[in-house]
Image (cartoon, rainbow, N blue to C red; front, side, top):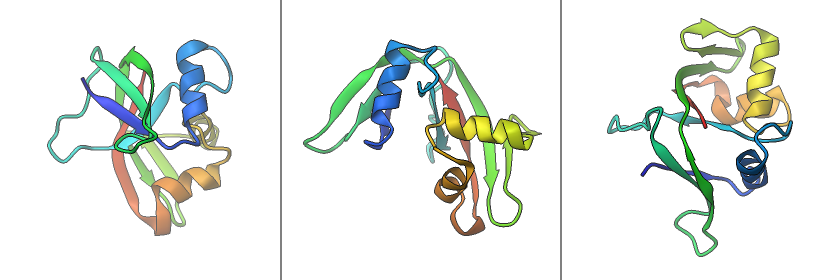
Length: 127
């Protein structure tokens, strides 16, 4: 069963998303780089969510089923663009994506995924 590990700062919102999916602070998605072996989780697969994996502080947040997987490309630097499913997101949709992924603002989002103007490619996984 595929597993996703979250930084401790995201864990409360992930747990909230499992318990109260309609809550405005709920985290019901994650953005991850493509796996080198190509074995990225697919919609319909059961997944397990953790924090602190591979440490003594490991805690299981819960189990759920992956609902969707959308390709994403994030460009930082001077452009600040997000392409999801091959479509360039408008600024308001980019902000919504960043908030849904647990970031407080768009600057934190781009700093995390595209430091120094690098290009990030992966998937948006939603459960």
